[in-house]
Image 1 (cartoon, one colour):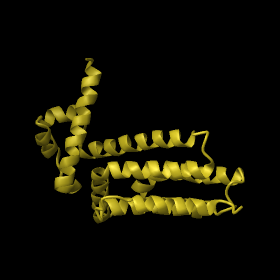
Image 2 (image 1 turned 135 degrees about the vertical axis):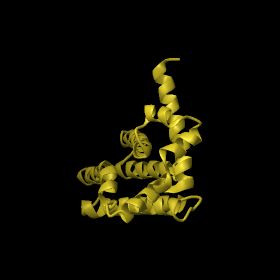
Image 3 (image 1 turned 60 degrees about the horizontal axis):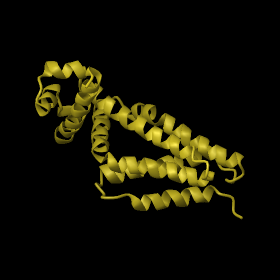
Image 4 (image 1 turned 90 degrees about the vertical axis):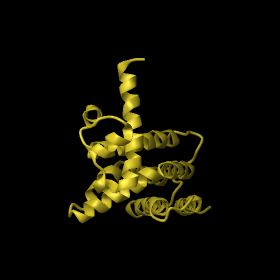
Length: 199
């Protein structure tokens, strides 16, 4: 097995165990030493893989977002689907990823609260991480309007509606600790159907 594969495998193991520490301790009280202890390695060894806890945290988010985007692009390219079905599929993919990464969502919310307490408002951090997703959703609505499948709608309002429902899913999963957000999938589908022209 190559050194690169071993290095990547170790990074994934560290990320998994670091999430446990973030969950147990919260972002603010998590230290590199606590992560190293959980991983059964020294801090010096941990620094070979990550320079600090924020890098570990950011890498986890980037990994999730890259995976979500790959899944979204696959759904968008499904030629057999109309625009309504594509948007519904994309939103379902996102909700499924959120459900599957509930632990990371809880840590993200803890981090955003940490930023709020330290006067470095979380808005810019969230906006930076979600701008591409919002752009994709808006473009899908625009494409549906151009194709004549959707009625003329205010694109910004449509995008805010869809994104707001996704934020609701995050809140339900991470704050309310709901077991499922399947009812939100129905709400998302209902919202997207409202964009369609009536026959």
